Image: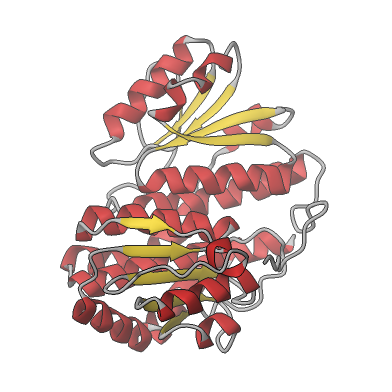
Length: 339
């Protein structure tokens, strides 16, 4: 068994442990958010952590009605430009908590007047000392280069923070049930997609809202673990140009969940299938497409995260099927420190 497979299998237990052990930190940070009542939330992250931040962008905007913007870390680390963030909140996401550019941007955000909150797997890391509040994930060591359990727990931490900040009972209940949903997600069979991608050279991954963040994460994992050139698009944006290269048997994974965007994602999937693409759709039936199983009956802000767990199990298997070791992608290291 690969490290990646073991770490994916740990996700339900890691999530349950975080929700128990992290409750005091979540409560404190949520109280600070209510006291600040930010009119803007900024996020700071790179790589998979930036996909987690994108997920939280949609979740915060949809539930709290507060706009969220990603801030380039180089604004502080290279260009040294102070930002006016008085009355705002800034959430930094970093698995290692060590990358100098992320840490410096969090310091700069605090100096600019923002309430700063770090989400990291490394308690006591530089990002925690640079922030007013920290949500340590407690996910344990992650030996595979490809982040899995830390990604899922990072998003879960942000959703738990959002639920407490907004005092939203429905999302609180969904978060409490997340470990069980993750366990169900690990049992689902996506082998039809694996069979199609075993020798593929490229693919599109589509989503809308929070599922777009999972599409971005999936495309990255295809590149990292499978050597597969995958690109992520909004199910709307793909029609503004990229669809021109979708021809016969071009593989497309459309991440659909049961929310307001569902009919739009299905319509795009069916349009690409009509162009001849091999389209696989989660959580829906679409004409000319292959349906992939999903965990049903989930809160729409949690459902895309549960999809990521099924995807991780699938993509680890796909990497080995393609003759690759998903633990050690070429030219990559576990901790990437950029300036």
